[in-house]
Length: 443
Image 1 (cartoon, rainbow, N blue to C red):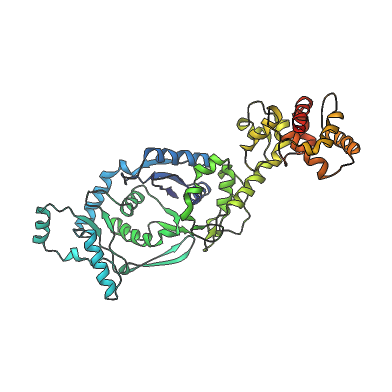
Image 2: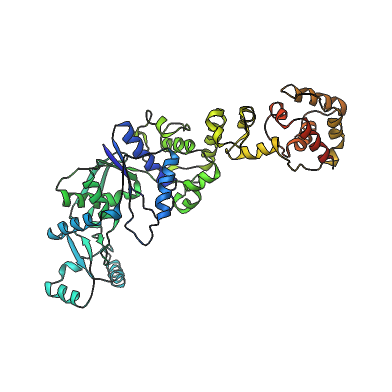
């Protein structure tokens, strides 16, 4: 098995990219295959070095590695050679129509009740007309002459699939400036690097029909590559996720503090009957099976991802996170706060509470309970028994219990209305800080 993930470095990776990247990686690792990272960067106008670097960084952050790597921009001579093969076979032909002319032709066909596809008018040009166009300085672009047949294949996810080539326009493979389009370069690369399986989004189904025709024109071998198309992701409401991909880029999730294990665990289970479990890619290999992926679109719900992230964080040991905690944070601190975290960066805020000088709300209306807290402030070393005993003493002095007792004290001691269990958190704050904060909260 040899698979590839082939993003274009024209933007940041998002979850819609990450899903097929993960699927390809899992397939290769489970079946002892080779995983290739290929950058489809022939679109020089939109491809940028920072995006190319970002793709590698984001994939490594997810826990994905690759066995081979190359850029399409380094293989332009191979595409030119393949184009010459198709030209000699009469399958790649020059065209000169402008976009306005093509639009006019399409509109005329619509009025006639015909499909608005290219009419192959360029094939009717005589040699004299071709030479005259070239002599007048016109630069041709080249279309691939599709077969007049229906292309069929057994899809690894969707089952039997058919694409009627006569219903499609002959695709442009070479632009007038001599640059090559993805439809063509991808086929050349897949053939020359020995790709055996292509796993990608369902939006490529029609493109696959075209590419199978090109594959056979270049290699003469049908069914050389196996295809699997994963249904596209929808948002939580069932809308098109593609309209808001900017808000769910891997880079943004990384900045927000989402754990990569939550993303890979969630994406690997999307569209299957399995419940997602946060896990690094290497821990997902054993249970991965692409045949479990449903034919129906899967819904990517950020709330579900956050819930999975929260559950994952709450189970992490100190050794697994110590390098990412604030300097000075120890295991006692981590065990006290981890059950209250949605995202790991929130640990910084709680570390400020136990070690810094925070702002607490003034609560003059709670003077009774705050004064009682100061008067009964425990002496000596604080431990897990301090808070229950202290709270009981304050309650006895004020007659308060439940929320009327605990809420003003939590606000005064932590600056927050919710947070870690004070039984384990209070010893980290300590007597001196507690006294100062209670006094400030009195106003």
